[in-house]
Length: 123
Ligand SMILES: Nc1ncnc2c1ncn2[C@@H]1O[C@H](COP(=O)(O)OP(=O)(O)OP(=O)(O)O)[C@@H](O)[C@H]1O
Image (cartoon, rainbow, N blue to C red; front, side):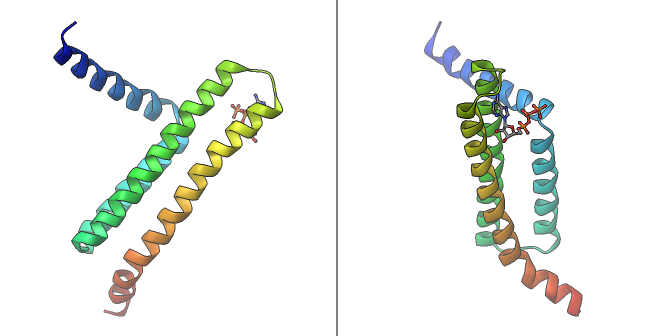
């Protein structure tokens, strides 16, 4: 297989990962809807370029954390379907990473959008 075809294929597998993640995971769909709402708000309030940077980075962070969490959950379920303390630890750690990202994203959202929302409500 040529190097070029290998590169193209690795993109294909990565997009397949998106398909697997977004088809099966309700949490990921919720994060995606939240991201769409935040992006729509960004356009609505015409936020600045650095505000866009902050918003897009935290959206990418949350979605990536959720995808990693999904991968870890699948791997954990493959390792053992029986209930095991080690599996619980691994799953809860991965979930904690998602929660941390979501909290930071919410704080960034408040910092970026609250001045616009306050100005809109005052107008
Ligand atoms: N195989 C397992 N062994 C031990 N703890 C587990 C295992 N699977 C999940 N848990 C733990 O159970 C709690 C609930 O997990 P989760 O929400 O994934 O549901 P679940 O028990 O896997 O059931 P379901 O997959 O039907 O939602 C979490 O604390 C998780 O870490």
